[in-house]
Amino acid sequence: MKQVSLTIDKRLAPYVFLLPFLVFFLAFRVGPIVWSLVVSFTKWSGMNEAVFVGFQNYLRVFKDGRFWTATYNTLYFVVVYNAIMITLALLLAVSLDSSLLKGKGFYRSAYFMPITMSLPVVAMVFDLILARGSGLLAVLLQYLGIGLRVRWLSNASLAMWAIILMRVWRGTGYYCAYFLAGLASIPKDVYEAAKVDGASAWTVFTRISLPLLKPMLLFVLIMSTILSFQIFDEPWILTQGGPADATLMLQIYLYQTSFLEGNLGRGCAISYMMTLLMMGASVLYVKRLGERDA
Image (cartoon, rainbow, N blue to C red; front, side, top):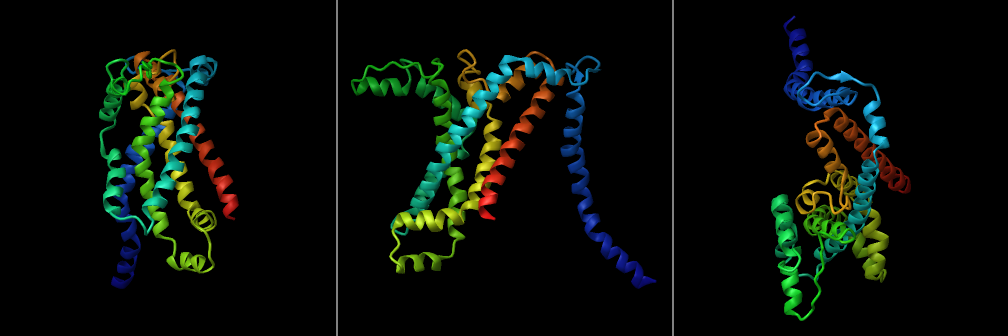
């Protein structure tokens, strides 16, 4: 009997160890998700009694022109930012992985450093740099004799690019670290064999490095896309969604609807529509890159 009891205890041991995490996961992860889904079907400001309204919040969001403006701006930002950032991060990783480069530790630390800085602080610094007339960029251009007084943050065409460039500056080094880890996992004898065959640097990159980095590329693409959809701090601090909603992102639209207009139900509906967009993008990436791997 004692042996049977001991066997049962061993079987239960993993579940006992997992139980605290499972409780916290259900309480602080699954719980808020289910609660926000329920709230998305109600009219609720957080102060009054919630009233069930069915799909009315979703329908009103669909009919709101600002939602489509925010969706377009966010998708534009996601596509352009990811294209620039991933290209630069990949090229930077290949350069930092080169055996010809001396002082790799310094360069890797220097490029990774921007991600360690507080995001609001970075946004405020860029605000000072891009300020019209008195900004660092304007002063530098005047010193060089270039009388170019561009309204970077108040120009509807340039404000989005200012945000994209700031995000690229901050995120490239971070994602470069992932590509460096991917390059380190590629067996060196593969490169040695290519070198013996007389393959050029471009051939090695396109035929060996890039195909073997595809799983890491997929991971970076999905992670970067999810974080890009959630962009809030930079446009909020720099432009607050302006000028004329040119930098209005879905997160800003969600914040304004939920807390400035006091409509938490519709805000939750917006968050679930954002989730569907992110899931759709992730599935598209996996389908496109995954099929090529198969």
